[in-house]
Image (cartoon, rainbow, N blue to C red):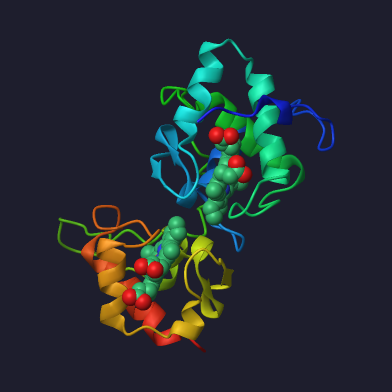
Length: 222
Ligand code: HEC
Ligand code: HEC
């Protein structure tokens, strides 16, 4: 898909003069009440596989071949964040956050060896607690099962679904509070996907899928 260059640098949102691509990567992956870039877009460097929006590696590799500068590409992405077409929500990020994401995409689209590592200074609020086990005897931390709410956030379910208990308002897929699906319906849907929804088998562990299914079934409509 060709990037529409006319959108670049029109000035309404200002030029992307500086930013922090590591913070941008973190934001690209994060889920927000308005959705998650990663849930809708494939970008190899971010290991995201969303298919609702265009593949960003493909969208920008031809621009790179044609010699567009990183600056120009960042301005295009910044414009896109402010003025997208549905179903991409407008202004998922604003201000410096939006500039950081734009710089990250400009640097890393079509270039998975761009070397940008997401900031880890503060633990991502959505990261599930990895089970920790200690082989040696003595103090072993009992592995906690995955937290369904955290899985819901990490997997970007909220970018597409409204669920009050998760604070999400996505509207690409059905409103889960209204649908009130049974646990095994959720489990099956998350495993295999269907319609415009991606399958999560392989991305989420069986335990995470069970946890998110229980979380949705227990909280939908509440
Ligand atoms: C709900 C799904 C969804 C979310 C969330 C989303 N996008 Fe999009 N995006 C789309 C769709 C669909 C298009 C194509 C329509 C358009 O061009 O406006 C698109 C287009 C784009 C384009 C233009 C690509 C091209 O080929 O011209 C860029 C760049 C982009 N998105 C970046 C982002 C970034 C960065 C984020 C996070 C801040 C994001 N998107 C969040 C669905 C989404
Ligand atoms: C990129 C958007 C997107 C994401 C991300 C997404 N879904 Fe969906 N989901 C949809 C769409 C679209 C449908 C409707 C599919 C259809 O009509 O067949 C759907 C359907 C569903 C259904 C209804 C199934 C049924 O049989 O009625 C459930 C439950 C569900 N999703 C849960 C989830 C959960 C949990 C997650 C996160 C692990 C998730 N979804 C992630 C878009 C998404």
